[in-house]
Length: 315
Ligand SMILES: [Zn+2]
Image 1 (tube, rainbow, N blue to C red):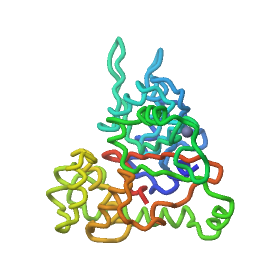
Image 2: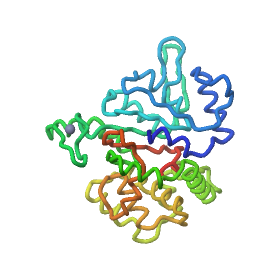
Image 3: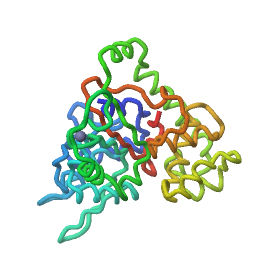
Image 4: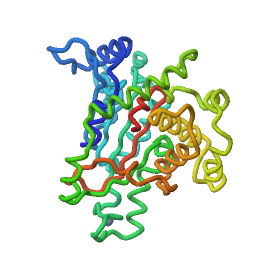
């Protein structure tokens, strides 16, 4: 439910993005007849039993774009991600890094664009109740560990925001109806953050924080002294990889852009670290506790912002 709202928070596609997305959907046969030009970020939510061809692309006969390409410049949502085949999940690492997929055929290769914002949702354990308020989990610790390990490793290193979502009581849900922000309000904030980043990056080849290579990010836009202390401590303790540090930096810039700050303060880096590692850093609770459906079970939600991704969605 939260993932479905995400495309609505993202800015409209630029003319160039619009043409790319329309071309992919035309080849995939998913272009709506009444809408010859796709102008909004697409949303694609394949089932967790999706095959390699359905997710990555290919198939028999004429190769077809997979979900990673259909979600180009939009959102790819995988529910019950821990149930997906490990092979299929690992195959997503290539498009996550490069923004495209290459499908090899007997008579040649086909390259398709695949820059998407990846959202994964998974239960915390096989019974779905581990860590939930007021209910007991029936799973053995070893099976909880095994279940979570299905999502660990190199793929998870590319996931920037990891959020535990508690189911809401009816009274909490009712309270939210009165105070919740509309999609339009949040979308306006995301657009302002995107414009702020684009203005800062005006004389570079990039327009979003997420496109900026790690080296440029670290050297061209230095943070205030001391802002990275906690991130460096995390690296020393083995909680953060070098790739992870770059990704934390990108998220910290987006947090600062959303708040209208010129550059990330220590609290913005802490916010990014908290969302990546799940370890509390003294950030006010309300900031990470937005939304959620009363009908959803406790979820372990992750999202990955690619090098051309829609980082502004991190609000
Ligand atoms: Zn359980």
